[in-house]
Image (cartoon, rainbow, N blue to C red; front, side, top):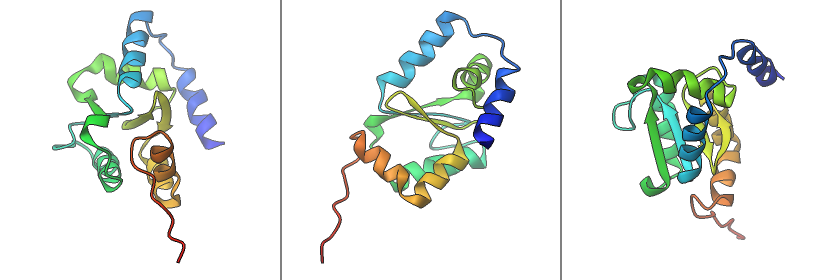
Length: 134
């Protein structure tokens, strides 16, 4: 419910993305299985939330060749556009197989519940962990 409230507040501030920018973002999130829009880079995150997102993805051993990151601090237009595109007001933002997953809080919650591992495995980003039958 709170997610819907945040999204509706973002919708109230829409500036309406151009089709060109919308197409560029859509292409970016569909070209690579895991896409993270963040502040900084994986080696040098520029905020604690981006650092936490990278750490969670590292814990799940997301292969570098299946992940691409975009530093929104390098491009102010992208920083604003991605918020409108996803209808989510904060950075970082994670996409898996072209679908918006959420921000840092959602990512951490999914990690703790096991949902993130399941999502990554179902989308063939990581190998499925076989449950032991001992």
